[in-house]
Length: 192
Length: 173
Image 1 (tube, rainbow over the protein chains, first blue to last red):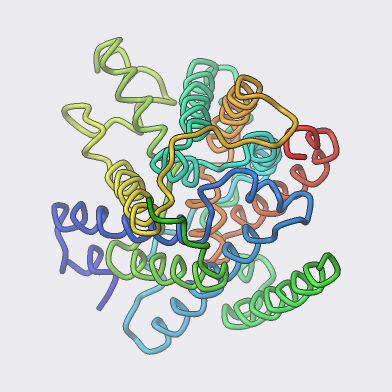
Image 2: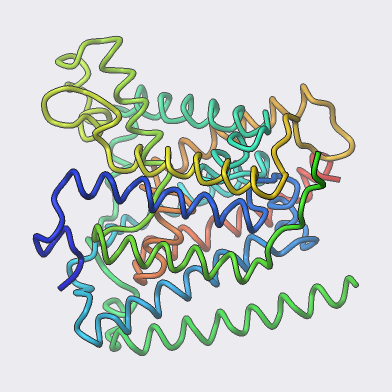
């Protein structure tokens, strides 16, 4: 039955209308959770504020479990939902660069837009930096293309790699996230 | 002026974002994103400066140019990110949290903060290109589908953040 765009229920113009609604709700909840404020996000790296971890992993858990059960009920075809492709080396390098940038900027691409939208000029600076970064990447692309497309694994899930059922992976990630929430609570109580 | 209301519990906000992400899977068959929209804007700007034919010769730019005319509004992620801006603004408006200022740690000035924010942005721009996504498109949207690359991104992103955090302490103290 769903995804609606993949099963022919929703055309391209409907998808664009949905984009506004989905983006609006995303921005709304990011701001509600305080993720438009850089010192709060940077607090994650000094363990003074764990909102990034909490928001990120409760969102991941909700979507992961929701998608798993909707697929099990026959409502959502999970195999038709876009799965990002894996490129081991460039994605590890990209993660390291991104993490360094996140630490220095205190905002990530989505949250920098929320920061800017709520009047924070540092959010605008992050947006400007991102555009310059993408432009630099594009200009140097002939050089870095071999690294960019190195070590491709295709659209692959952790559970495919380990040869275990998808549900087992969902269960393990759920258990790890819940353990992480408990640790986060302990860290906060230790500070209080 | 109304006093600013406190932020929602992070777990509640997280569940809200998770439901939005789930709705995106169900309605459009793909997750949320942010950095992809930046790539589209840069590609469209490149096409506007160089001309679409010239811009299309670059393998880094071409995938982000829609067939026919190059308009950033054709890209789903750009529209979605415009929604993020509106949603963030509306939420802050209703909570009395709209305020023009430059947010920073207590030991640095506005100029230093703006330079750091810009440099961090550059690093994230390059990093998100290599990683093929950011905290939204890669960590959240791919992570919730157990994509291998998404979890590599999550692990390396936090590893770099924690490893370098002593060096950046002055920015946030």
